Length: 123
Image (cartoon, rainbow, N blue to C red; front, side):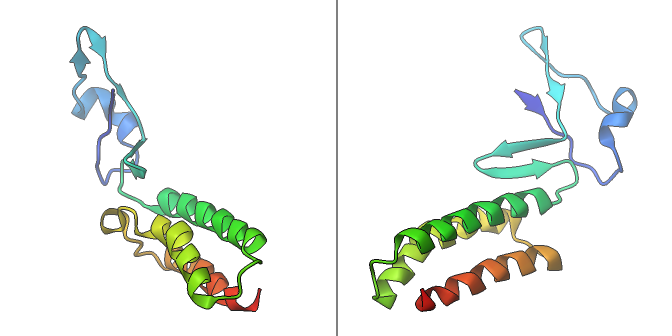
């Protein structure tokens, strides 16, 4: 069990003795962490989603590469689209309501993956 403090301060963990209480659970002190992954979504102390988006882009890129290497047997566009939706697009849609990317750099990364997927017709 870990404790995560969400604040807009620069470094919350530096101010621990002054504004954060120490929590105990069965005589065991709970540690404070700078980020925590819960249900596949990485949350940090400032609600920055950069690390979450970077991990999703890496995972989607590897799965898109897998599709490119293994789906050369099909020429049907509908079949390729269904493979893409099942393996790549589902990564982007998992908990997207929570972490929806708003920074331009994060959006550009997602758009780049989707542009690569559009080129699937040329494989």
